[in-house]
Length: 257
Image (cartoon, rainbow, N blue to C red):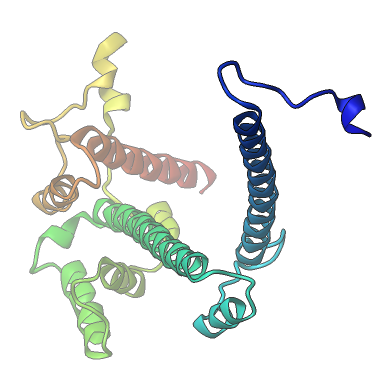
C-alpha cells in the first residue's frame, strides 16, 4: 500500500512536520513494544503451565517432586529461571509440611478412636465383673496376675490396651462373659423408671450414677470424663446399656434352659 493510499501522516496541531513524524514513530515503537510484551507474556504463561504440569501429579499417580539436581538442570537448559526454580522448591516444601500435618491429624484421630473403643470394652468388663473393685477378690487377683505377666513381657503398664488384653486373658471374651455372668437381680433405670420424662433420668444415688455403680466403675468413667473422652450422660447411659444387655441375655438363657 502506498503513502498516497494511506494518506498523510497524522499531524498534531501546533507541531511541525518533523515533530509529527517523530510522534508517529514513537507511537509505532510503543505499539511494537506492546505486541512484543504480549508475545512474551504468552510465552511466560505457557512456561508456567509446563512447570505446573511438572509438579502436579497426573490422575492415579503419586505427587512428583523435582530434586535439586533436576531443578538445576532445568535452569541450565533455560527451561526455568532461578526464581522459578526457587518457587518450585518452596511449594514442594509447603506441600511436604501440609502432608505431615495431615498425617499427624489422621494419626491423632486414629489413636483417639482406638482409645475410645478400648475404653468402652474395659468398661463392659467392669460392669460384667463388679467385684473387680475389691482388691482382695479372686476376680481382681486373677486380672492382676494376667496384667503382671503382660507387663513382664514388655507391654506398657499405662496403656489401656494392656488392661483390656489382661481382662480377656483372665475372663475370656466380653460377649461370652456378659451372656453367662454379671450382677444378678439388677435392673436398669428403663426397667424400674416411671412413665414420661422420668425414664430419661438415671435412677440411683444423689451424684447421678446408677444406684448399683461401684467405686471402681465411677473412677473409671470419671477418668474418661476428665480427659474429655466422654461426658457424664454418656457414661451413665453406657453403664445402663451394658447392664440391660446382661439382664436380657441372662433372661434369654433362663428361658431356653
